[in-house]
Image (cartoon, rainbow, N blue to C red; front, side, top):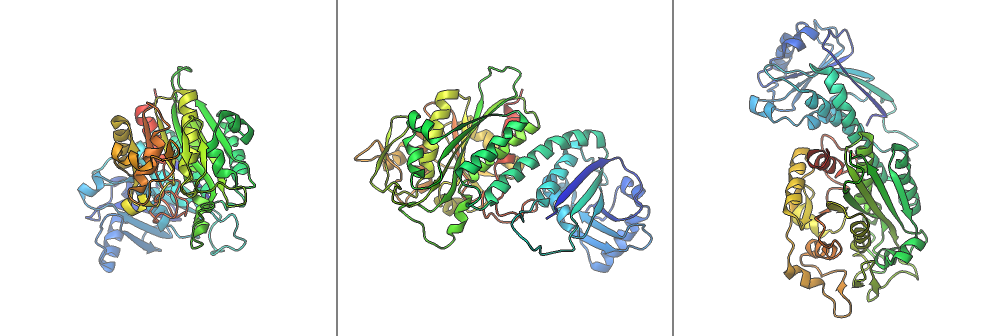
Length: 498
């Protein structure tokens, strides 16, 4: 990680010293601009590659210390592979990869973002900077002793590119996205004794500094609204539940219908009376990953002044098993008026979302709603940690989410909905029960949520496998990934800004 990363774009010029990063292809050729920045560099690369048997496969690197005949102290050569591989380069991933190749002690570096026979656009350069910012993130707030005392406190990276002024402009939007992702990561990584519902609501409320309108509903207000499903989850905790509504009005037409994002925010989930096993229960501090994503997304949209009206709503609770906690067999009444039999108190996230979804569709009449939730372990059984589960009542919205996932690498896989699954959550004592049993667990959870959206176009993203403890990538080394911010920002930017 880097405590502070300073990124800047510049036109090409000669490099006099320090660490330089250059790019090559599978043939180990460099561009004319790269050769001009470091005269004689191509011959140095080819000699070193021959000595090291370097083949130049995609994202392979060659680290040359004190290269002869060059003014730099260190030369890092990154290959982007064959022509067809270069054409499909993920520049966000490349930016993360390059930052990871810099030594921890580095205080500055120059990246010559150029390749022979290939034009790198301003947007690609900006994507490169986004990847670097995402890779730089770390969460060491509570460590009193650092692993590497020799690590530089700040790193300045200058990116030489052919469209420096345009890259600077595009880079500002990417900076906003990176800030949103890293805010979501911070929230997920915080311990539950620090980030309990009231504190989470306070942190979300700081987005008012960006021009976002904030409304915080306390338990008294939610009780008046009839939010018995959400309130039932938190009644065993000494911390009061909250519902935070964040509103960004960026559209030219102030009265344009908003789009809406809803997040599950269980700041710690013991399972309640249906208590979870002790092993790995500490990971349940991340059961608010959906709400963290919504807060990070709203931060990104407001920071880059997105031209769209957006509602972000998060239901924040703590699920604890004290003498006041709800029990299996209880029946609660949701804001919609529908009654729910509690079969398992660990199927709590859908109860929170039920009331928030109903509130948002009823009050704001959005164009569509997308909710995110670390909802079921069943989705990880089905999809592992490579895709989030996508459920939707609207084909167009589902298609757009899938495309945004492919573009950003935050991939989703559409799962089925259907009346046959819906029957599994019918209750003999109430309108429905909060779990349909083991089979199709992620599907029946989605069927439950669908009962609270009416005819609003809606998508549910089950992010249990992607929001926390996801595999490390070139752009993420954090336990909390901030998954979903880039996906949904892309969705908004591609289809709903105007």
